[in-house]
Amino acid sequence: MTDKMYTAKIEMVEVGPRDGLQNEKVSISTADKIALVERAIEAGSRRIEVTSFVNPRAVPQMADADAVCAGLPARQDVTYIGLVMNGRGAERAIETGRIHQLGAVAVSTDTFAMANQGQTSDGSVDASCDIIARANAAGLTGQATIAASFGCPFEGEVGEDRVVAMAAALATAEPVEIALADTIGVANPAHVSRLVARVLEAIDPLPVRVHFHNTRGTGLANVWAAIGAGATVVDASIGGLGGCPFAPGAAGNVATEDVAYMLERAGISTGLDLDRLIETNRWLSGVMGKPLPAMVGKAGGFPQAREETEKESA
Image 1 (cartoon, rainbow, N blue to C red):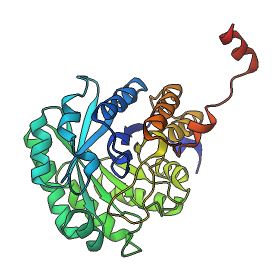
Image 2: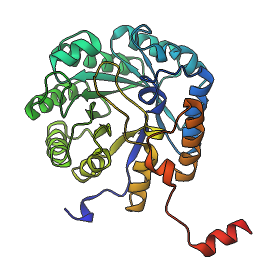
Image 3: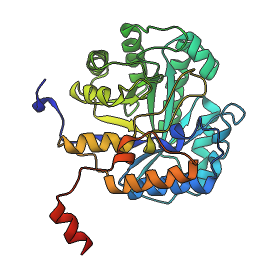
Image 4: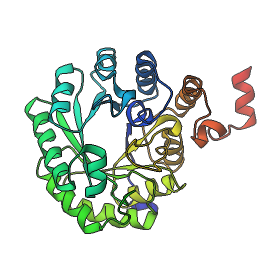
């Protein structure tokens, strides 16, 4: 694999306000959630998953979805994404008047699909297609994520053919893209390269987005492998927070700072300001009352030459 195979630019989707916070036990105020969105925008984020429209008894952290949406800054250049699981959630998101894109979730296995959203795997594909149709009918856009694309917390191995077939079925609903999610962080770069390439071929000309958790430390390697195989959109969470309430063992997403550092140093543009991301990491650490997993948040960016540092401090 040579450098010529890598794109010059990657679109980043900031999922911290939703996926980053949904599994946290500390209650985060609506004001802080809105502030996180605002800080992400200041750092260059232009697609942000701001909340989810789900049963608040199941995911208490997202109970203020409507209030978060009401407080979002009005921006013509930012796409706000709301995650929804069913028709009722889709209608709630549409009714806010602030969500631009609905995110649907299909799950690769029956056991996880039942735990996550109370339906079979095939049922989750049908529901996702309905959500995308509702989004398009309302003048919004829709996207779909295939959860547990690389392994299931309940059933273990997931066949690649199954994921490819799901992607092809979802593509018929005309989403803007289809994402492959490593919900429990079990993927490896070889598997990622193979599956991304197969799904791209199956859904052409739709793009593939990827969503990795760093549960076993392979998240950044998997991002690199996915981009090499043709993925053009990457989900990440400021600070590396994240997890699924219905997937035992799921840990944080790949950190936005870490992905941005890796790609920018490799000559791949993300449109993100690393210094502002690091500042937001420190702010969010204070909100959460704990250090965050992101490595670049701890170590900082690439060191400046001493002469440059002295000029800046003069």
